[in-house]
Image (tube, rainbow, N blue to C red; front, side, top):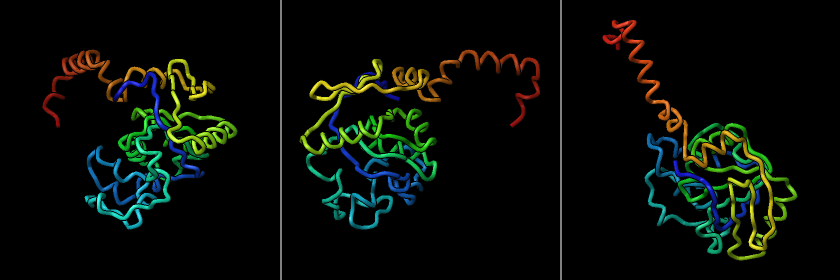
Length: 214
């Protein structure tokens, strides 16, 4: 998992509340047994005018020109600005995978579904909770200024706009440590690899018959 320290990027405003995980990555794309390749189908039913299926050539599909991520001014956006209860619905981990693989590193919203919120941290995506009034102000600025950017400083827990306005945010210390260190659950486990091997050796020495079990 890539380390997250300071990130600066273009902001895209998804001005909708209660965006569920089936909208983020529709169910038909969950058939894949791999953890990659979901970015092209992020918000598939909103980005395209036809029905998408795994393996389809997205370059020849009709695009919805009114959807925010298809607009030229938001190309290359890496910060998603949205409304309350983002990531509700089913608990699919594919949702943060799709957002990250599309190019997003940060999501800003007033609230999130709990499981989605937890899955973001486990996959290197930073979900920040901000007051609704702050989200309102940022959405207005994003729409008013082409190429509007924000800088997110995780160590200082501050968001900085191009005008110098700063917004503080909270993040749980352990999650902050993992993001800044680039550690997912597997990475955290591997930090204790020596202790795990020592335990296995002691366990087998005390119960050697386990070596022959499946």
